[in-house]
Length: 243
Ligand SMILES: NC(=O)c1ccc[n+]([C@@H]2O[C@H](COP(=O)([O-])OP(=O)(O)OC[C@H]3O[C@@H](n4cnc5c(N)ncnc54)[C@H](OP(=O)(O)O)[C@@H]3O)[C@@H](O)[C@H]2O)c1
Image (cartoon, rainbow, N blue to C red):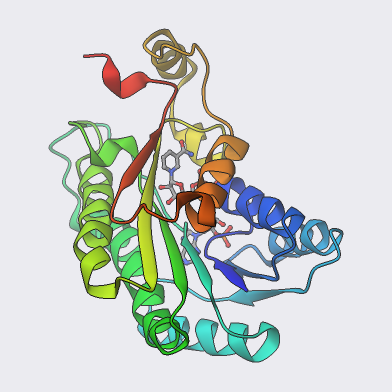
């Protein structure tokens, strides 16, 4: 069974659907959008797999414990985990280091990655099998003066997965995907002008799709990637290779 956090919409929704196409039972986590989570659930179940929606704020330890318990009670042991839930905020000014916003971004993106991982690891070790993929961002690799909190959170996700990889080996593999800009609700934070600029500076001359990310996640969860752990796979149309 696979648990995908933040799967009511955007990238998480498409990851859940693509995994269902592969025959996986899917636990669909959401935070506030029950209506959209139900739409994801309908699509996922249309592929004939077992699935449930479970509300939990991934930045709250109690809620994450409930999420894992409910998911396993309803669908069986979690063998695969995708930590995808995340938030972005673009301040008008780089020096607008609003602490309330910082805490929200760090708790959702970093604690929200650690907490589900922490809860599933004991079971995975016991069963001698586990695959974890964390969604980071290319913002966590380079320099992003216009989104310092978000970039710091996504760099932390990469560091977390890299540093955990040895401790959870050999039965558990953990990797990170670092997407470029993907057309979802989150991308609405960027102006048309900014998007045009990004496309111009992307060798493959387009923005990414949620399917681009889902395909990479499935690869990292599958045995096609059986000798890969602790790595970050960049999915950005080649953008980071440009200065
Ligand atoms: N879109 C991009 O350009 C892009 C690029 C690089 C990386 N990423 C990363 O990819 C991931 C998905 O992004 P997206 O573009 O699909 O974002 P999105 O369209 O804004 O969707 C965010 C998802 O995360 C969930 N979520 C937010 N806070 C949560 C919390 N505290 N607890 C549980 N779920 C929570 C939302 O649930 P509700 O609907 O219930 O609120 C929603 O399902 C994020 O980690 C993001 O940082 C995105």
